[in-house]
Image (cartoon, rainbow, N blue to C red; front, side, top):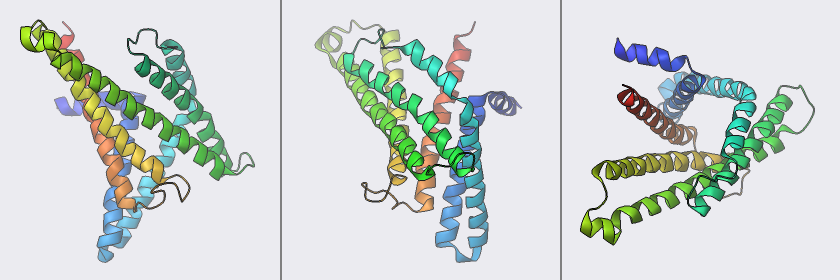
Length: 241
């Protein structure tokens, strides 16, 4: 019952619902792609699962029509990242926020063009939105690598290594942050692989992934994201008196 209550609570929030829809969509694409490619006898089931995956993806696209304001508030609150100690981390975060902010209107235009609401070439806008998403992911990967490098240096600095002056609680906090950054790094890399796949042919491995591999990359990213969210929620509950 506790797990069901937790799931129901997560589904009450937009973020929790989006994570579940995303995970289900990519899982359907993974299983459907495998059935279509490897199991001819069940290709009909696989095709239906791919249709479900496509509809869930479209559902998320429509829901993102309302994300611009939340992203703008977050970007405005972060500003130029004055609270960040590392200059590289600060500017990678700022550029990532800018890419995310521009991503939404580009995707909205592409969606409206596909729906026949406006008369423009949707493929160009889908390409632009995908490129912005890929840029944001690449900056996220570089940011995580930079943060991990700095945290590793902190733990391996001569002062910490030989005098053990770092409090145990702070050491645990640094190790927990490193674990979180590793998960974020892996999640971003999986999404980045898909982002490149959806770019126009001729760009690296664009267009070369079979449906099941796209589903696998998306499932890995989604599961890691859900795990991080569950961890953050449990830590918040533990910290609450």
